[in-house]
Length: 307
Image 1 (cartoon, one colour):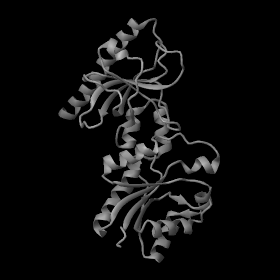
Image 2 (cartoon, one colour):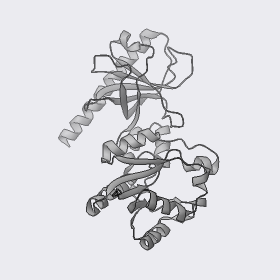
Image 3 (cartoon, one colour):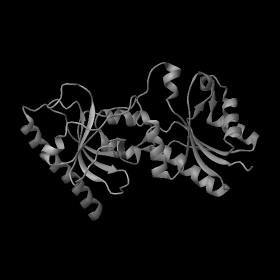
Image 4 (spheres, helix red, strand yellow):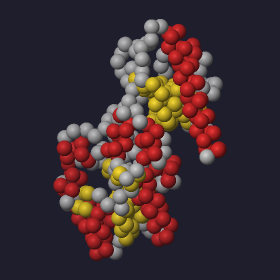
């Protein structure tokens, strides 16, 4: 039986930012040239969690990364390895051999700072030399910079925590997003006359600065996004649970939303979350937020048309 030979991008790809895009595009290019299957190999959890005993707050869950790689780059073959003690203690040569032999890699693509194997002893340069010995192609992608700084997931996490989502999106190369199944919530949308969806960030995924955002919601099976006002926070006016949730008011949609898969894309931070005296005050503020969100997207539309 003929084995599928692959061109594989190696990395964690948290956020799938513009630096990662250079790897993924090169992988597609090599696959097309060599008649290979473009693929991505990543880990389900961040290696630093096990290596350093902490927890890296991730920009996206593993499912989020997989969905984005498929949607934005058209690479369907996304493979995850569970990073455990066995993987952590593998020599870099054994790890490279397993990728080449078990996944039938004919070409590998890595970033300039790629480290792998026990104690990170494997480097991009060592991998390139080892690939040459094994007759496997290898590309090392140099650092990608923006505004004179190397693009990194660490930098993007910091921007999101500060609510600087427009800046973060420039570094990502796409809007920051959350994908989840719509949960039933407080049904505030019924009272406000706007459909409302409630979602939550997966465990281990970074929660951006609490507050209200201009957003777009993409529902499963639809290609057009719906303008929305999205609140990240604890909804202090209507709840005393203290649990962080993501509540989006869709401004141009009517119909049943519960149980559908949705993607919320964050575009601009509008204001911090506040507690209001009563529901009427909250309702009035959400209407002001809706006007602000519409104004934001209208200004972007005019800019793209006139600029």
